Image (tube, rainbow, N blue to C red):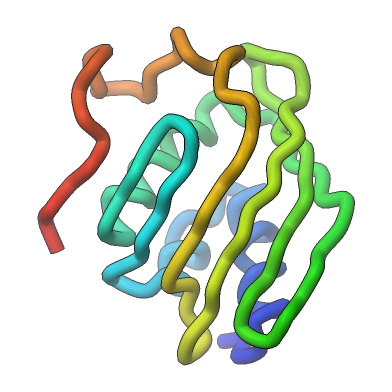
Amino acid sequence: MPSDARTVVETYFDAWKQNDFPRMRALLDDELDFAGPIDRFDNADAYQRAIQGLSQMKTDIVVHKVFVDGSDVLTWYDLHTRIAAPAPVAEWSHVEGAKITTVRVVFDARPFAGAQPPNQPPGESAKSGAR
């Protein structure tokens, strides 16, 4: 397992690109705190399910720049999907003990507003308290 913040996050993105969800999950702290313009999660399993749903629409992830400040990594990338033009995304990840503990994502969510992950009815809250 990678241990420095940059390598942890780069391995996470590589796993996501390849839809290698077991490898991706191994890099997430169980109590991952995620917030973005569409969803909010307080545990890694709920976040992982959402990423798997999104990955059914994802066609590519093109990383343009990675900025590192100690345990914090900011990744600037384009998310390519079947439903919208490539979306520029800024994703901040915080790493502790070789695990991603916090993720904050910023992007224009308007092109994705009508899309729902499989098995999630419109308007259902994505937040899950199960740990």
